[in-house]
Image 1 (cartoon, rainbow, N blue to C red):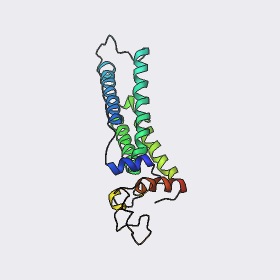
Image 2 (tube, helix red, strand yellow; image 1 turned 90 degrees about the vertical axis):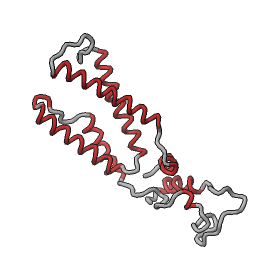
Image 3 (tube, rainbow, N blue to C red; image 1 turned 180 degrees about the horizontal axis):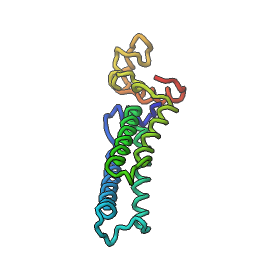
Image 4 (cartoon, helix red, strand yellow; image 1 turned 90 degrees about the horizontal axis):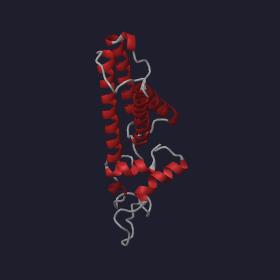
Length: 185
C-alpha cells in the first residue's frame, strides 16, 4: 500500500538526502568496525583501543546494527519496488553465508543483519501483499490534471474552472483516498 508521503516523493522524483547521509555514516562505521575486527582477530595484529569485549566497542557495534535496521526499515516504506529490494537483500545474505562458509568455515555467518533485513522485507511483502505501480497508473501528476483526463467534471474530461490553479489538489488526494478506502490500485 502506497502512502501519501511515497506518492509525493515519487511525483517529485527526489531522494531524502538526510536518510542517504545517515545510511552513508552507518556504512562507514560498519566498514571501519569490520576492518578493525579483521585486523585484530583474523590477522592477529594488536590494537590498544579495539577490543570487542569492551563497553565502547559493544556500544559502537550496537549503534551500527540498530542504525542499519531502523534506517532500512524506514527506507523500505519509501521503496517503489519492495519485492525486488527484498529479494536482492536476501540474495546478498545468501552470498555472504556461502562466502564466509568457504573463506572462514570456523566463523560462518548464518543469520546476521543482512539476513534479518532480507527476511523482514520479504515477510512484509508477503503480509501486506505486493502492490503494483503507484495509484497514478503510469500517468504523471501533470497528466492527471490535464483537460483530457477525468477531473472535477467527470469522465468527459471537463477542464477545471479557470480560477483553479494548473495543478489541483486531486493529484495529492488520490492516494490518500485509496488508502482510506483500502482499495488496491
